[in-house]
Image (cartoon, rainbow, N blue to C red; front, side, top):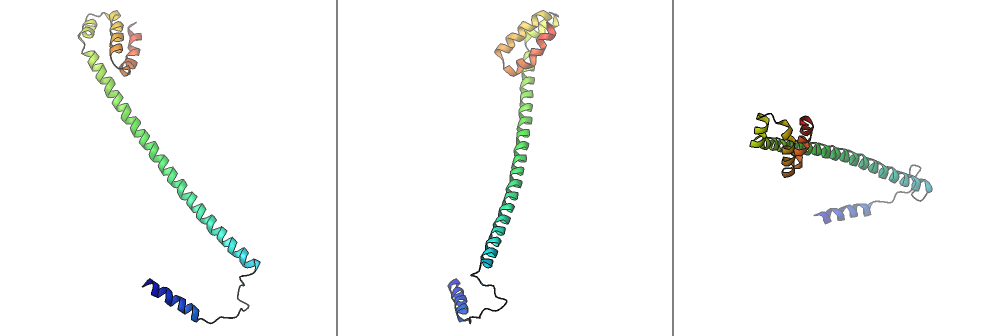
Length: 138
Protein backbone atom coordinates (compact mmCIF):
# COMPACT_ATOMS: atom_id res chain seq x y z
CA UNK A 1 0.00 0.00 0.00
CA UNK A 2 2.76 2.42 1.01
CA UNK A 3 4.81 1.43 -2.05
CA UNK A 4 1.89 2.26 -4.33
CA UNK A 5 1.65 5.77 -2.88
CA UNK A 6 5.38 6.31 -3.24
CA UNK A 7 5.30 5.14 -6.86
CA UNK A 8 2.28 7.36 -7.56
CA UNK A 9 4.06 10.43 -6.17
CA UNK A 10 7.22 9.56 -8.11
CA UNK A 11 5.21 9.15 -11.31
CA UNK A 12 3.44 12.46 -10.75
CA UNK A 13 6.73 14.28 -10.23
CA UNK A 14 8.28 12.63 -13.28
CA UNK A 15 5.34 13.69 -15.46
CA UNK A 16 5.68 17.40 -14.53
CA UNK A 17 7.07 19.74 -17.09
CA UNK A 18 10.26 21.65 -16.33
CA UNK A 19 9.48 25.34 -15.88
CA UNK A 20 12.15 27.78 -16.96
CA UNK A 21 13.48 30.17 -14.29
CA UNK A 22 11.71 33.51 -14.04
CA UNK A 23 12.14 36.71 -12.02
CA UNK A 24 10.44 35.06 -8.98
CA UNK A 25 12.71 31.99 -8.98
CA UNK A 26 15.45 31.74 -6.34
CA UNK A 27 18.49 30.06 -7.88
CA UNK A 28 19.96 27.31 -5.67
CA UNK A 29 23.55 27.71 -6.84
CA UNK A 30 24.16 31.21 -5.46
CA UNK A 31 25.73 32.33 -2.17
CA UNK A 32 22.40 33.94 -1.20
CA UNK A 33 20.61 30.59 -1.24
CA UNK A 34 23.40 28.91 0.73
CA UNK A 35 23.35 31.73 3.30
CA UNK A 36 19.56 31.53 3.71
CA UNK A 37 19.67 27.74 4.02
CA UNK A 38 22.51 27.74 6.59
CA UNK A 39 20.85 30.58 8.54
CA UNK A 40 17.53 28.73 8.62
CA UNK A 41 19.21 25.53 9.82
CA UNK A 42 21.12 27.41 12.52
CA UNK A 43 17.92 29.13 13.72
CA UNK A 44 16.00 25.85 13.84
CA UNK A 45 18.80 24.04 15.71
CA UNK A 46 19.22 26.95 18.14
CA UNK A 47 15.45 27.05 18.77
CA UNK A 48 15.28 23.33 19.43
CA UNK A 49 18.32 23.52 21.72
CA UNK A 50 16.90 26.47 23.65
CA UNK A 51 13.58 24.66 24.11
CA UNK A 52 15.36 21.47 25.22
CA UNK A 53 17.48 23.36 27.76
CA UNK A 54 14.40 25.09 29.14
CA UNK A 55 12.56 21.78 29.51
CA UNK A 56 15.57 20.11 31.15
CA UNK A 57 15.91 23.02 33.57
CA UNK A 58 12.24 22.67 34.55
CA UNK A 59 12.64 18.91 35.00
CA UNK A 60 15.76 19.41 37.11
CA UNK A 61 13.96 21.96 39.31
CA UNK A 62 11.03 19.59 39.82
CA UNK A 63 13.36 16.71 40.63
CA UNK A 64 15.31 18.84 43.09
CA UNK A 65 12.12 19.94 44.83
CA UNK A 66 10.92 16.34 45.01
CA UNK A 67 14.23 15.27 46.55
CA UNK A 68 14.06 18.04 49.15
CA UNK A 69 10.49 17.06 50.04
CA UNK A 70 11.52 13.42 50.34
CA UNK A 71 14.49 14.34 52.53
CA UNK A 72 12.19 16.41 54.75
CA UNK A 73 9.75 13.53 55.09
CA UNK A 74 12.58 11.13 55.94
CA UNK A 75 13.98 13.58 58.51
CA UNK A 76 10.55 13.99 60.12
CA UNK A 77 10.13 10.21 60.28
CA UNK A 78 13.61 9.80 61.78
CA UNK A 79 12.87 12.46 64.40
CA UNK A 80 9.57 10.80 65.24
CA UNK A 81 11.25 7.41 65.58
CA UNK A 82 14.08 8.83 67.67
CA UNK A 83 11.54 10.55 69.94
CA UNK A 84 9.73 7.25 70.40
CA UNK A 85 13.04 5.51 71.18
CA UNK A 86 13.97 8.17 73.74
CA UNK A 87 10.52 7.92 75.32
CA UNK A 88 10.83 4.14 75.52
CA UNK A 89 14.26 4.45 77.13
CA UNK A 90 12.92 7.01 79.62
CA UNK A 91 10.01 4.72 80.50
CA UNK A 92 12.36 1.78 81.00
CA UNK A 93 14.55 3.92 83.24
CA UNK A 94 11.53 5.21 85.18
CA UNK A 95 10.42 1.64 85.85
CA UNK A 96 13.74 0.65 87.44
CA UNK A 97 13.12 -0.07 91.09
CA UNK A 98 16.46 1.41 92.15
CA UNK A 99 15.65 4.80 90.59
CA UNK A 100 12.15 4.83 92.03
CA UNK A 101 13.54 4.01 95.50
CA UNK A 102 16.30 6.68 95.30
CA UNK A 103 13.85 9.37 94.23
CA UNK A 104 11.30 8.32 96.87
CA UNK A 105 13.99 8.51 99.56
CA UNK A 106 15.21 11.89 98.15
CA UNK A 107 18.76 10.52 97.74
CA UNK A 108 19.50 12.68 94.71
CA UNK A 109 23.30 12.33 95.03
CA UNK A 110 23.00 8.62 94.17
CA UNK A 111 21.00 9.25 90.97
CA UNK A 112 23.88 10.35 88.64
CA UNK A 113 25.87 7.11 89.12
CA UNK A 114 22.71 5.12 88.41
CA UNK A 115 22.09 7.16 85.26
CA UNK A 116 25.70 6.65 84.14
CA UNK A 117 25.34 2.88 84.54
CA UNK A 118 22.09 3.02 82.60
CA UNK A 119 23.83 4.91 79.78
CA UNK A 120 26.64 2.38 79.64
CA UNK A 121 24.19 -0.48 79.16
CA UNK A 122 21.58 1.29 77.01
CA UNK A 123 21.63 3.18 73.74
CA UNK A 124 23.52 6.41 73.12
CA UNK A 125 20.28 8.24 72.22
CA UNK A 126 18.92 7.99 75.74
CA UNK A 127 22.27 9.08 77.20
CA UNK A 128 22.27 12.28 75.17
CA UNK A 129 18.95 13.22 76.73
CA UNK A 130 20.07 12.14 80.19
CA UNK A 131 23.36 14.08 80.01
CA UNK A 132 21.48 17.23 81.00
CA UNK A 133 20.02 15.39 83.99
CA UNK A 134 23.49 14.73 85.45
CA UNK A 135 24.11 18.47 85.83
CA UNK A 136 20.70 19.02 87.42
CA UNK A 137 21.43 16.53 90.22
CA UNK A 138 25.07 17.50 90.79
